[in-house]
Image 1: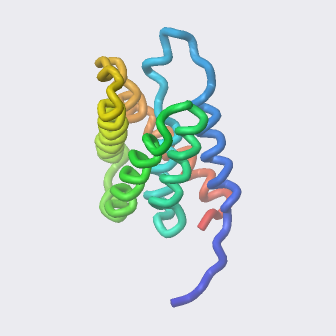
Image 2: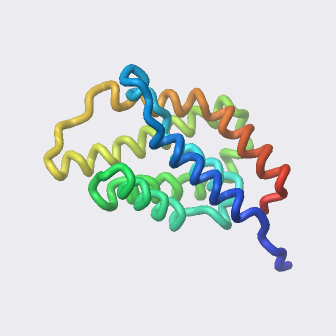
Length: 162
């Protein structure tokens, strides 16, 4: 086993920062239900591309940051993102072989799982159940997946992130 230095940690970090900024960016009222979960899309990408560097721990930390910045129950997003990261890391070899449209279907399943887990936590603390519009971000995330994948892949290649 050869030991090679890991490169591009700042690129990974700043991609998560950019995703958090996009997640928190104010949108018009009509567009809010369709805001894609940028943080989850970036997490899924890095779990598929570099599972040895980005995994459950990063998903958990990203979830804690999301909980703090969105003022939700501490651990709500953390649990959901850790589960999504776990599944993405476990299935990274199979998923990378799929064409982008099939990957987008898998990403839809992960985004729906994240929404279901956060809904489960909200139900446990007696918050009202989500309406149908709360599931729309998963669909927009699926539609944006090919572009997110291509942009992050090109960044990874340009800066030789390993």
